[in-house]
Image (cartoon, rainbow, N blue to C red; front, side):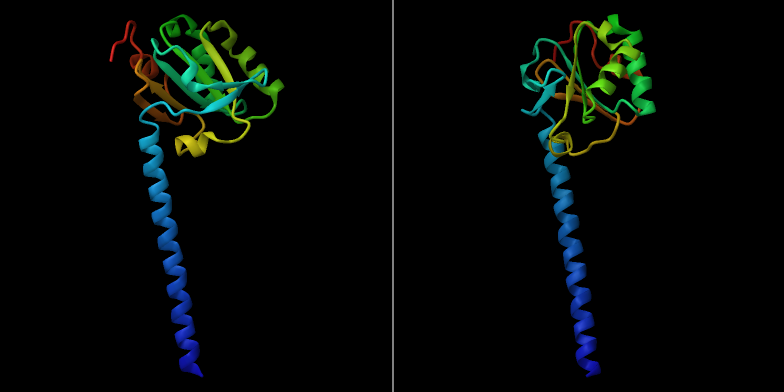
Length: 177
């Protein structure tokens, strides 16, 4: 009887270890797929504040595209948004897209007003209502900044709070890749 229990115990440990290995390999594969997928701008749509779908590929391809993933209640996001609002003129040579999964339109609009984001002429604020950002980009670190060049190739990716001067260094005037 002890021998049967011993074999069942070893067998169950083997199943657990096997399951964990498969799970780890699967997650690693998903991460690598996402890293490869975001090397060029993904074909994905989010909702505008008016509720209409906006595809990321629909933006002017002659200008670099800066994606900022944020949440209105995040202190780091508030800092970045405040810096963007204060430096609105320096973002004139790119298209700025801010994406949030927050479903409160009032909170998002208040965030934009407080941080003077409406003063940036070339900004678009989008809502990730279907929570697809993590699936497409592989990570949903708040805040995140993805900078795509004029040919929609990923130039730089920042996870976490990022100084605006680092972002601006990646989007020089009259950029050609």
